[in-house]
Length: 280
Image 1: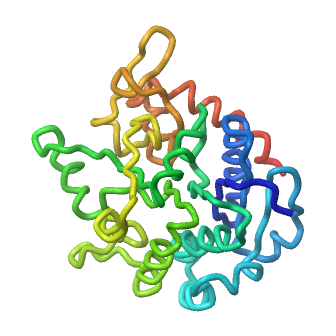
Image 2: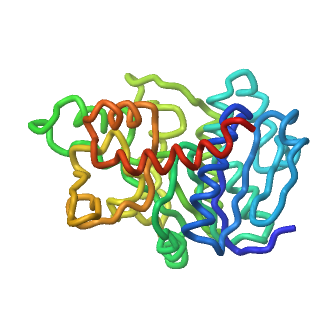
Image 3: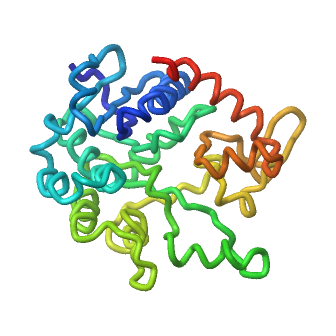
């Protein structure tokens, strides 16, 4: 039974459920008045888990009647990655359509929160959607390769996005274009589900762009979002406390190799949480 008006959600395959539960723990620790909703894309696992407390599990069968879900499931059923990516707007739409939630944040299951992020829900009071920039290199003289990636992979990260009930039209549009094509075809300007988000601020009023640089700290924004030690705190650009980190494989390698040393303690804390579920 739903109990809250706001939730964070994620989509996972069974083998990445430990990462999703670590994300869940970080969400509930830093924003406890929040539900956490998990869509598991293989029924053999989701039928064996129970919703409890602030955590709610869903199977593909439970969301099959959501907006264009049958078409997306049919088209991408043989690609686990594309299915997860294209179900993001569908799952968010499903949760908002239940009229139990007014605000939803989607987070990839390799994200981990370290500070209160309730201000993101507050952003969804005045705006219908929020997008989080990648904050990749903004000048070719700094780093040509990372500058050019802006134009192939998109300006906004599809792994961290929020919407309220009035943002459903945007979610429907995003689901529609994902159904049209989910592929990396750089010469045509396609990058899976992500590049489409460049359209959103142009097409939909009340779209907020999150300017807090401590959100979605990642491998791809080391240049523009410098990690700075201020006393005992690590701040982004000496100003922003770290809210959440996107622990992609490349970021983890960068931290371990010493190329991103100030995130080492954050990685240790992430691994400690992850270790609680790795043997389950």
